[in-house]
Length: 481
Image 1 (cartoon, rainbow, N blue to C red):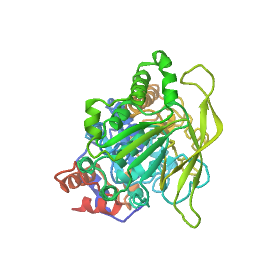
Image 2 (spheres, one colour):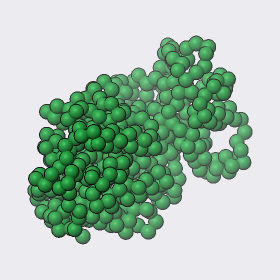
Image 3 (cartoon, rainbow, N blue to C red):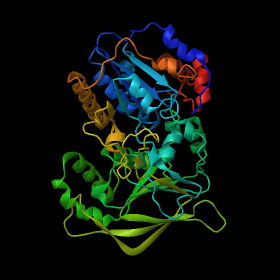
Image 4 (cartoon, helix red, strand yellow):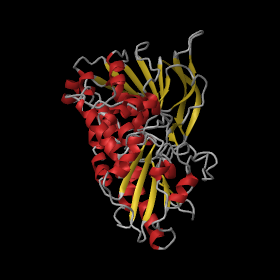
C-alpha cells in the first residue's frame, strides 16, 4: 500500500460542503470494498435517511470488479458504474480511496467508529491446479491475465510472453476462460475501441498466438460459461471454432429437454455448433476473412503435469488425463472417471482459469473465516451480533454474474436495516471521532478525486472510452492536475 503525507486530499473532506451526520439517531455504516457487492449494499441502505455510508477502497479508484474484472469489450456490463455513480452522489455517502483494510485501518478501529461494518472486498486470489510445472514462467493465472488487460496496477508488469508459441491452452470452462480466449484472438482493430490497457494492447499487437484450446474436466452439460460468451466466440471474426469429443455431443442431445431454460439454450447451441457440418452464410463470411486463427473446446480432460524442456523455464506443453462420463444416464450431475489414456498438448502459454478465492481477513482481527470454502460464514450477510456483515463473493463464494451479486447484496442491506429497526445496532450521536481525522496522514482519495481521474483518463484518447492509468502514482498525479 502506497501512503504519502498528502494533506490536501483529506482536508478536502472538510473544505467541501456536505451534509454532516445528524445528532438525532443516525447510523453510520462502513463498507470495505467498492465493487458491486459494496455499492449495491450502499444503494439499499441509503434508501433510509437515517443511514450514512462510507466506502473504503484499497485503490485510489472505485468499482472493483466492474473496472478490473469485466472484459474490455463488454461495455454494456461496465455501464453499471452509472448506477454506482448515482449512489455516490447521495450527500450521505463518502468514498475513501487508497485505504488498505488491515494496514491503514483495522477492524477494531472501524468497530468503534461505525454502527456496523460490511466486508465486501471480494475474491482477490486465484485457485491453483496444484500440479507439477505450475510455477514455470508463462504459466499465468486467469485472474492475473484479466487484471493485466484491464489495467490493474498490481498486474501492470505481468511477465507474459505471446511471441514464443502459436498455441495457448486455457484450463477452465467458465466465462473468464472464454473472455481470455476472445481477448487473445480478437482482431486488433476491435480491441483498440475498448478500454483495454495500453500495455496489453501493445503485447497483443505483436502476439503470435493463432490457436487457443479451452479445456475442461467434465462434459458439455457441465460447462460454466453462459450462452452470451459462447455466441461471442462463435461469431469472432477470422476465428474458426473447433470441437473435440463429438460423440459426447451426440449423446447429450437426448438430455436437452430435461434441462432448465438457460442451460437448455446453452447446450442446444453447443451441440448444434459441434455437430454442424456446413457453416452458415454468416459463419462462412466471418471465417473466410483471413481465417488463420482457431479456438478448440476440448472437454473430459484433467491436467496433471506442465512440461518444460531441460534448461528452459517456460512451458513446452501440458499433459491431460482423458476422462469418461460414468453411467448411461446423461445429466448435469454425472460423474467422471479418469482413464489410462493421456493427451499431451504442445503450448508455450498455459493460463489457469479454475476459479477465484477470497483472502482471509487481516490476522488478529478475530473475524471468522472458513479456509475450506474461502468465505466468511454468515446468515443472510450477518456474521455476528457485533455489527459485522459480509457481502458478495466473500460471503457466498465466487459464483454468478453481477446481477446475482446485486440480488445477494440487496439482501444483505435488508438484513442490516432489519437490525437497525430492531434496535440491534447502536446509533451515532454527536460525539465520535471521524475517520477523516484518523487518516489525515494518508493520501486518501475522495469521490471528487475519482472524478478528476475519470475525466483525465477519458481525455487521453478520442478513439477509446478511456486510457486507464495503471499505476498508483499516475492516479495521484491526475488528482493534483
